[in-house]
Structure formats: C-alpha cells, structure tokens
Length: 142
Image (cartoon, rainbow, N blue to C red; front, side, top):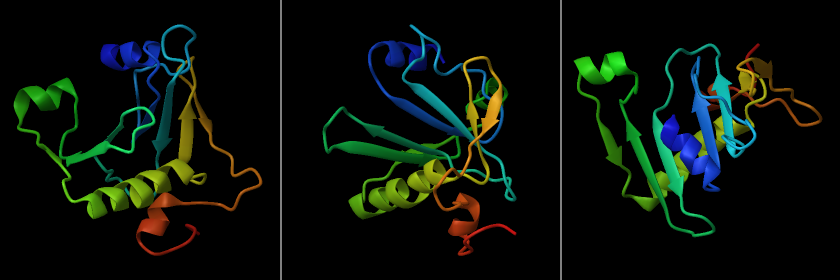
C-alpha cells in the first residue's frame, strides 16, 4: 500500500479492481488522489489476478497474470506465481475485454471512498453493464 501511495503522490494513476475488502484509502488529498478502487462482487466468487502497467503516454505496456493473492497469510505459507503475457494479442484481449469490462461494470461494482465506505456504482444514463455475465455470454444477470 505504501508503494501505491508513493506512486500516487508521484503522479501515477492507479486503478485497482478488487474482489472485496481493501485497506487502502483512495482519493485522500495529498496521499492517494490518483488512486481509484472498484470492488466487483457478483454471482461468481473467482476473480482475475491481472496486473497491467502503462508508462505515461507511452504505447508500451506490460501485462501479467497470476495466482497471487497478496495477503501475508498466503505469501508466508504457499507459493504464488505471476507471469508476463508476452503475446501482444493476448495482452490486448486481457486489457480491452477483461479489465475494461470490469471498469465498465455498473451492476456489480462498488467504489471505495476515502472514508473507507463503499458506494454502489450507478448505471446513470448508460446501458447496464455486468462484467461477469458478459464473460459467460449473457448481457445482464436476471
């Protein structure tokens, strides 16, 4: 968390998509103004472990996938693996379909606020988007 805060203070935009609880506090002035945290909780319990890094306005990016559930209890007691996605087509799919799908979700998504509470992401004037159902070929969970 400290490294993410440091990155935010250095001007790096950080978007986190988490399954559940998150101790980090996004949007705190002078600390984490450039950090956003979105929680997706829906029908499926599994969640992707994707790490996507983009350097500034550069076209160059790096994408990794892994088993890593980076909680101390897991890092101390089991082996976690993270591997780079070298194939550009696969990396593009992961970014454009999976990550962007989660970021568009306005059915199962909750946004973490600076005070540690979550607020449901509203569909607003846009069409409902359910990332989990789109991944299995359904438009909207009934």
